[in-house]
Length: 423
Length: 147
Image (cartoon, rainbow over all chains, first blue to last red; front, top):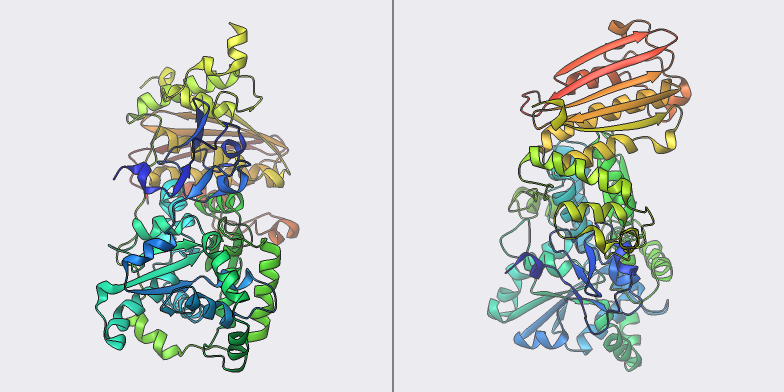
């Protein structure tokens, strides 16, 4: 498997017209237009999905599991992200959505908000047990983890080594379902339903464990219509769901779909919540310069407003956020998990990372620092002569990046149309 | 390695410019990553540079960073025109600060600036003239052993 294959984002050459929307939107400058088509550099891509949002041609897709892939499993188990509850109108209760998932073919559906609360209190325990380093950084957003590995390698040790709710849920189900249902472990397929373009990579190429406990991730985009149709056709069951709510939801856990959700549960700690990829980068830059040392937990989610703003969600994030907040208020701040359960799992290391997060060496200008310095000098000279229009016509997002590509020998000066004229 | 083999870059910093606070140190940090220096060295440079940058923004009227990088060491000469430091020895003490209440409200002025620079550099020279300004000459060796 090559490095580029690790990434879930695919650009369709048929649809791509070589415009510059994704080019300038990419926060890590991982996209170039070559031969009139956008190309993603897998070494720089952090799977954030910003390009998906900005592509006017709908040419960028995220590699997620398709519904038919699930036929490989005899028992299909769904763990939907709590963001899913905000995707349908206000009258549709979470219970009905879980019911609809069963109607469309899942054998078992497990609710994630209680596990989110479990994860939250495990993080609180970890903070209390570890006075250093500060700030600790939550690991729930896989893009933030990858961003730290690549761009902020010295902050790897600040990541809270507690697995995110989706993995904890799948791990618990893997351990118990075969016994309870008396079925073979290999017959069980556990699927996460997600608004996130990066979950598939975190499942296929996990960084904190040997193998993910999940078998795949279905995007909310792909599963929205089947759920919508199932909801429409199940009026009678709706009444059942209303009268016999069979699942307990956690208001605290539900809130983690929104930015600030993880920190809201931590009442006795100093916390900061940041959302959006550019702001996340800005704050991590500050942490790397020694700031925010008085903060216990830094929650970063690269999607605007948190997971609810994920690129693979359907409903606009403001509506979805309002609905989830309504549910959070409805359920209140009552804890639904037993703290001793959490404590038991915590001390058994059931919730913690198998492997520490390791830095991914970013590519310097040259392996040899002496040569890298020469290249940086040359790059400075190139930046001076380039037109500073940042137009993207050369195929790089801006003039400084073109200069960088030239010294890295992946572009030439005449790629710039203004330089051609000058000749 | 002669000076000709070094990468030199100059940065201007305006006193009181809290909005752009940290941008110069951040640019230096990212540049050093591209040179391929070790994460630990970069972290030390970033912390020292940030403290120096903040000192200009908080206390001086105008200042500049003169960065030079060779594979062996990172040197930043920081020069400002400002009030200068009356008692350098006192300013080097942890917890000593002349920050105004407004600065403290913004979270600055804990009296860790110069001590933090000292802690993260291998060589540090401070020359200050009251009423004129301050010059810091700091060097971080790329094979340094300081934590």
